[in-house]
Figure 1 (cartoon, each protein chain N blue to C red):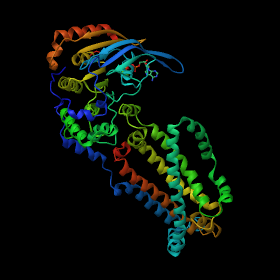
Figure 2: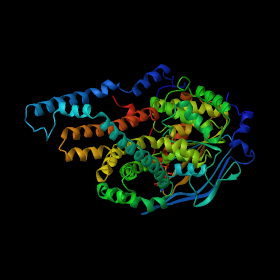
Figure 3: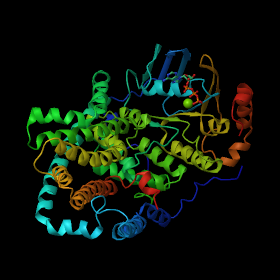
Figure 4: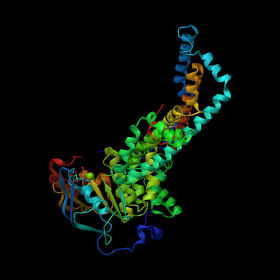
Amino acid sequence: MFARTADRARDGAGSEPPAEQGPMVDIHGVDVTFRTKDRTVHALSGIDLTIQHGEFLSIAGPSGCGKSTLLRVIAGLTATSAGGVTLRGTPVEGPRRDVGFVFQRAALLDWRNARDNILFQAEMRGLPKAWARRRTDELMEMTGLTGFEKAMPFELSGGMQQRVSLCRALLHEPDVLLMDEPFGALDALTRENMNVELRRIWEDTGMTVVLVTHSVAEAVYLASRSVVMGPRPGRVIEEFDIAIHGHREYEPTLENPEFQRVTARIRELLGSTATAD
Amino acid sequence: MTPQTQPAPAPSPTQATAGTRRGRRPSLGAVALYPATFLALLVVAWFAVTTTGLVQPYIIPSPVDTWKAFTDNPEYLWGHTLVTTGETLAGFVIAAVVGVLVAVLMVYSPTLEKTFYPLILFAQVIPKIAIAPLFVVWLGFGASPKVLVAVLMAFFPVVISGISGLRSVDPELLELTSTMGASRIKTFWKVRFPAALPELLSGLKVAATLAVTGAVVGEFVGANSGLGFVILQANGNIDTAMLFAALIIMSALGVLLFAIIQVAETLLIPWHASRRNRG
Ligand SMILES: Nc1ncnc2c1ncn2[C@@H]1O[C@H](COP(=O)(O)OP(=O)(O)OP(=O)(O)O)[C@@H](O)[C@H]1O
Ligand SMILES: [Mg+2]
């Protein structure tokens, strides 16, 4: 249902030449320093990270260690002070169109219903209308939003709003899906459901996902590789390959020894700073 | 943790339709009930103090006399009301258009904001009644000085609400649109402007009532028509009934304009929280 189609060629992002060789994202020697009136924050220091095509990378770490900044650097929303990022072989020099971004808050347009919020992506990019409508219906069905096309954001639960935001980020079939604590504001149960859904979407599509999260369980359940960051200055402390291949059922994965080994190691690394869950 | 491998069953669509009911506004009857009751009591009190001879009619005319001021001079009052309405509307529309443009320019250009904001503030704090005679000297006794005072009065709330409305847009939404490669104009019309509408419309409501005051202040200074002129004449003749009649028309004019924008609000921003949570 979700396989990349020939329609993709019409998409703005897809009109660039495909760069199947080399990594999807290449972050080399990235430093980010914020200077404000009364202090200088060294948000990121010497980040080297390579993300392969089709990889699901999660980034965990205590608050303020620069996770959001790193994600924003990949999308071209924050400029680096040193080093650089290449996305699909082209250097990131400003906001990138070939990404899908999901924020912690759903950031929906209050004056548009769920369907039109998703279609917003297509309107702004000038994508073909008929194609965008068809794809919106597909995405809404896939995320269990069918029947809520006409619902306004204030009529949707937090989880449903976040699903709309996810659909919006997926509409244009981006090369990389960047998510900044997308489920942070949800209750535990809804969060689990969203995790299962996101994992299924990734398994079905094989797209590249970078997910920032506070939750160790989320980081390990979802990702094929997890990066743990430390604060002051923000840097990568350790990387874990999560060797649980193929389809991951939720409960069995949580009981998988590999899952337990990695989560235990990450919790150890994060000490008391990480949210226990 | 609860075992959960399936996506949460979505609540049924009918619930969403039930949700929209929250958005329905209370009927006009419900809105008008309390003020109408209060107004009725006020008129009764008015009758009481004037018919018992407690207050002299030249201080407060009786409701009957005031009513007669309306019925005895319908053409006179109607003519002058039209003049003031015209000045008010012209002043309001000019203030709204120029105010929104200025707000947009200031939000997009820090230099323009730094240059003009203090000047606009300065223009706002000058008492309009003090500056109105100058406009008469400049522009004569026609409608233009009155319109200008109305513009000056109504302009400020439009600019202020416009600026704060345009700034109220979620910065993440703007970042999101920057990853969509959309032009600034598209971003303005599809994101910034709709997001600014709730605040802008509250500013316009204030501006509408101020425009009425502005027009009448302009008429006070030098006019041979309009409700301000009617009030000055009635004052000179110690015709308090006529004065009351003119006052009532002025208030009605302000309330009417306010109500029109209120209706525009329900049509333009039905999604807005202040509407949604009312009643
Ligand atoms: N625009 C900015 N201006 C100044 N300082 C900033 C800016 N953005 C981030 N910072 C600082 O950079 C550091 C890293 O911030 P960042 O938001 O990336 O952390 P984070 O890991 O995402 O934290 P959290 O988990 O709380 O979201 C923080 O100390 C923050 O105060
Ligand atoms: Mg963050």
